[in-house]
Amino acid sequence: MGFLSFIKGNRKSDRAGSSRSGKAERLYTEGKNFSDHCRYEEAKRCYEEALKLDPDFVDVWNNMGVVLVRQNKHEEAIRCLNRAIRLDPSFKKLWNNKGNALFSLGRYDEAINCYEEAIKLDPNYGIAWQNKGEALEASAHQSEADEAFVKARKLLHK
Image (tube, rainbow, N blue to C red; front, side, top):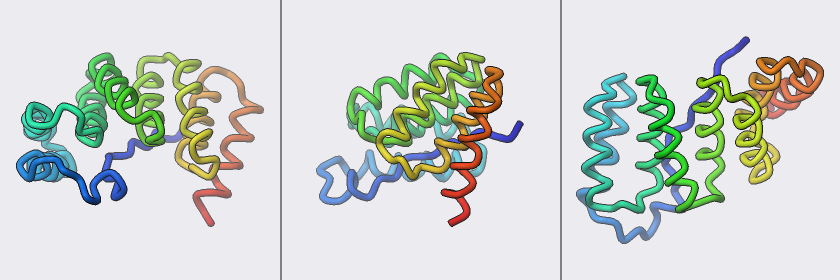
């Protein structure tokens, strides 16, 4: 089995012309930097502060979910990702990351559904195809997993 790919938020379209506070943006960036260096508690604190200033900051909810998964706090991560999905159900990375959190709990069918949502939003989303293959393989659907892996390879190695 391979590995699941988590994707941190950083949507240019969401951030361009944004009216969110500069302090929330700075905390978001600082949290990303901490997370990139595996300093998850510091990242979590930055994200919590950013969310106090801007509770609708989708990228922060997403990154908080990723940090919580890395801390093995999967249920809490799912709650954060669900909040983000309610705010922006068209953000494919949220669905991918929620799928990864569910996968980590052995909830493969639910994970597959999330990867499929991400793929519906972007049929060329190679990482979601790869992760879907991992979940199908884990749930003993090898032929479907192989198809997903083939699709992922084609998309990821363009």
